[in-house]
Length: 434
Image (cartoon, rainbow, N blue to C red; front, side):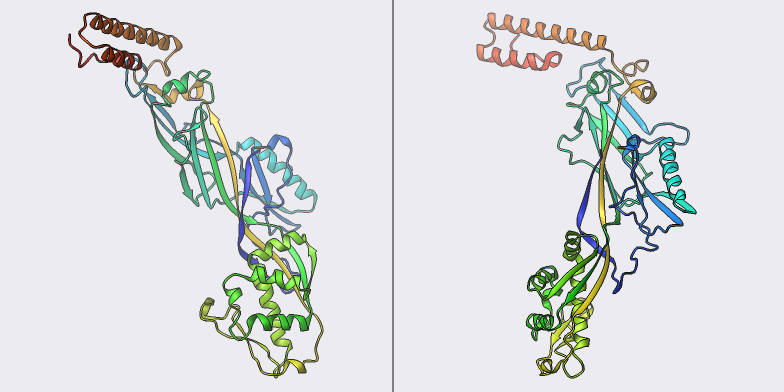
């Protein structure tokens, strides 16, 4: 299965309602927590999410591919080319190759149509009049190329990154394959049909997470005492500096509030509180207290803070130390109801592999040594090995003769023997008396 990860904390609040209205109506984002269940035949091929703004009569779905392919133009020609030097001559740097290829996320049309038909039927059976599909819009797409199961740079740090774009867009590569990855790795690891090339994709996109609907019931006098102690004279700096989540925990642990979850779980509520939810809730409670204490008993009031957004309007609270709180007769609870949903980034990781040769790719492969043979054959490699062995034998024979004639020292002989074994036909008998 493709590996999927989520990035927290949540980026921004979509909506906050004092009552339980729908927060995602008309919002074009996939609902990440509710992928459409599909049969096993679609596994590792596609993930489909419902749109967050779906209605019973109008259903929209988001498509996320889980596979990739080499890009094809409208005529079916592959965006692929492999040029290599063959093995006719001995090259100290190995048998070189140049690979040019463009990858893209992909779902074949037959599989996509089948999945869409299944979902369309279910939706229409449930009363939908309109059913539409579209690909997600990536925030960022990255791709790393593999050869022989290894990253081309071994540690995998070399990657192509595309910001934005579309799912259908491809990512081009041009790679010089030398030394560790020479043409033998492409043509001999199981033959030309072996899947020696590969790519690893990551794709980030936005969607909406779980929706939570809950009430916070605050005891009036305890809430007022709590806020008076916290904001005393200097303003609500803790919230401005991002400590709302910790303040909410302290407030709840004191018993001043009761949490009633209507939709979702308490763990999900906590997750939202770690984002913007706590700030919004605490501010809403303070507004209620300011309104409830009355004109002559306004112990909590808004005041500008120099480091707050817009000169102090957001969470800019101070206290008046004037007497008036003791005269408040309204001691009923304060109830705040929140219906929340956040967007977040989602990341899917998937891969692909493909052969370096075979009937499909051989037309796009060129052997500069012999254009009639896309890849060197096993017989060619055997002949090269035989030639290498002859070169080494000749070098060792010459070195032994020089040693026997005392033209070189034993230490120099040992050094040159090691060099001859390592370089084979590239060995040059230089720096040695004749």
